[in-house]
Each structure stands twice: as C-alpha cells, then as structure tokens.
Length: 193
Image (cartoon, rainbow, N blue to C red; front, side):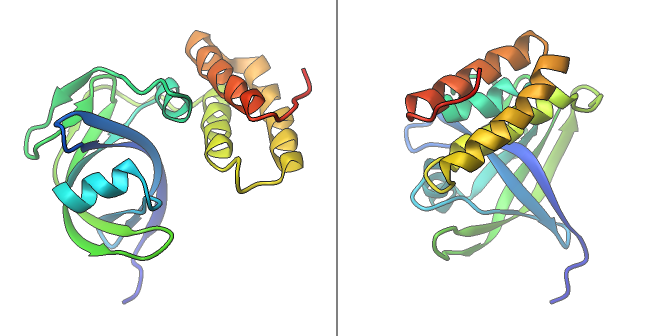
C-alpha cells in the first residue's frame, strides 16, 4: 500500500482508563492515508486504554504545560465530554478530533492503533508556536527518552533549547520548563546554569 501522506503531529492523546478517569499523554502521531496512527510504547497507560476501549481524542493545544506536565507528574487538566465517542477532550484544546480505532497491530516495542475521525471541532484559532513553546515540546521529548539517550546529548540539547526559553518564554513556558529541568536534575543529570 502506497503512503498518500505522512505527517507527524505533536499532540495530546486522551484515553479513558478502566476506572473512568481521563488519561492525557503527549504523543507524536502520524497521519497516513486519511487515518491517524497512534503508536504508544508497551507497557503504557495509553496502550492499555486503547487496547481495551478503542476510542480516543486527539487534542491540539498551544499550552505546552500539558506536554511538560505529562512527563513530570502534572497530569490533571480540565476536560469536557466528547460528542461522538465515550471520552473527554482538554478544555484548553484549540481543536480536537474524536477517533474510533479501526485497526490494531500489537508490535513491540510499540503497538500501532489505526484511528478514523468520527468528529472534529475547532474551539479557538492556532496562532503558531513561539520558539520557547517549541523548546518545551522538544525538552519534553528528551525527558521521555532520558533512559535511552547519552547524558551528553541531553546536556547539549538542553543548552541549545535554553536560548529560546531565555528569549521568548512567557509565564506558561517558564513554568513548564521549570518542571522539565527539575525532572532532569532529579535524574542526576548536571546542566549548565
């Protein structure tokens, strides 16, 4: 099967846990041939929730605290009920897409869930990311891979990303950045200050 399009979107995926609570996780999802591919690591809460429930919501947000918060224990964000699936979307989402899972490959170390959009809504315009917002997202990805990357790589990347934080961060970006830097330091990685 030829790929008609393939784009990676940095989003927040919300799934429904077995106890009925909403779980939010940042994820790079891929858009291929009109479907979204969600590829969570195994084991993970997102993997377990999607395997059991087969519905989720893709949240598009410019509040980078949600990305950083998922990596640092700040996971509780206000949500609203979805329209067509049993689940929730982030109340600060600029837009959201509600998905039904129509295919599943249980590969290791990452499964692949193929979702089709059953409902979409735009709540506010996306004005673009500033450099600090992009830096927070990149740092959150680094934190999610701390056990897989050499310490020197993390130190180099954070030193570079700090330039954008220093130049363009507002209060939300500074809060998110602080959470991420604390997590890195708690892992015993020394950063230049």
